[in-house]
Length: 638
Image 1 (cartoon, rainbow, N blue to C red):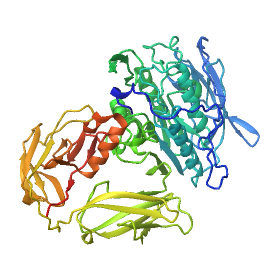
Image 2: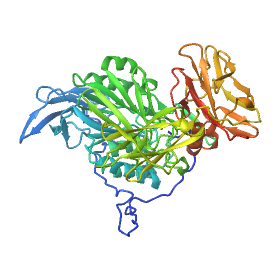
Image 3: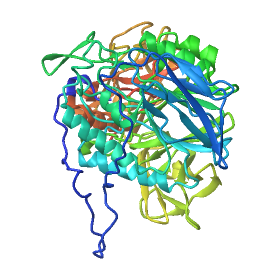
Image 4: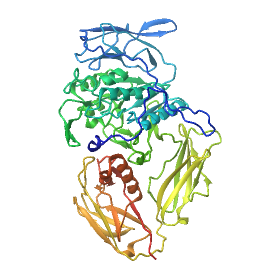
């Protein structure tokens, strides 16, 4: 997701010509290392028959080939992306294609593999072949990656290459990868040249083709291109899609694996109906709503799914916001989860159909000042799922990271005895984790579990032995990979005295374009270090300031709120404690502002804020994080 105001900025970074040999690095001993960027592996893919009349009717067979024999397969879904039919007892189907159709294709049925291509150009007769699947589909692993934003930027192609190597090295091997949008970094207004679009597609597929398992894609609005605009102009629902078709196939499709019917939904259309001002110019941007002909396809596709399967959708964002009738479809067709991207954060939201946002593999390729972080401070990375029957579990893996601190967010308040957890992905024999609170003395962490792909460790830290203020927790494995996280210790034991009064400032309920603005509906007390310093007005959307006597101040100061009404909450701007000429912010807030600025420029530091209390439905986004306690660390004047 790139914010509209900054889409016209030139992407920073080195450009590489991947048609030449891939870059190779020298190891310290002079031995040639594996290339940082994989050499492009390009494959011939079916192409639309542009300019050829759509057949009035398409017939064909779906055959199961096994042990040298072939027989027709009943009940397999065949589609042109507009209507869906099923094969009969002999594996025969007949379909009347839509006038806008470009492919005829098959929904992979559970327990089978498609031999050859799963999609083909339109023709009067199109056959498909299946073979029995070789693996048990009741339990398996798959990877959800999103927002790869591949271009000719060296960081993007090197990062994608690293992702492919990591996934290929996982044991047991994932069965497939799904990418839920923004595969490339093309301009949303289709102003990027067709040649540049083709170069980016070549980079993406040329690297992803090194995966040793299938991968499935959602287009996303940064993946549409200006190629063939004369044939498919703005206003045509197919506008912007031809390069995607030529490299990746249909942009609406489904496949089944085990008990899950996966559906890929592309909701971006260039209909000439939405104008956005970018760098002083009005540009046509996508209309992000599934159009009626594809709503109908979704209904047919899901109604034709195999009996006793449930549905998981993949799309760039929550379909409740982008697809009419989605909630009705969810109830009728047992849609249980949405895999989404776009907003570059790792988040889960309970809706009629819950969605899980998968962070971003890109993080922020285009600006190294983002420190390889997403704007919620998650590392650039991807989700890994394990499916067991109808149960799904997952974890988020940072790109290039095997060690991760998984409990307590950045800047969290710690008091008393605290348990901090970390995990180690794909541990080697005799490998373990250690922790340190001072960077010098290392103690072993205790193994507490072995969830799939990783070992979970825990350390019990007595924070009363630490000084109040900022404290850095470090974890490392025996290979020397170190991860750090900054916390705030606030046991209230410091005896520091302050001579200057302070001023606490924040705003409540400011309207933004990213989530629902809220003020508390009832009474809300403002507390600093547990002491009442004032109250917020019910439904008061305003800026607040509170004078804090110097006698109330400590080295580590804790701001909290008490809502009288159950379930109450609010949206809150970035709180600031001013002492003399110094503005002090919560450590997490400082980090978030730094990364937002790297992503979107200096103005972005003040975009959004926080969701406090039990306010609903405001969603977490790159600009609003849930947080109930804020800390301000001061240096005392004795």
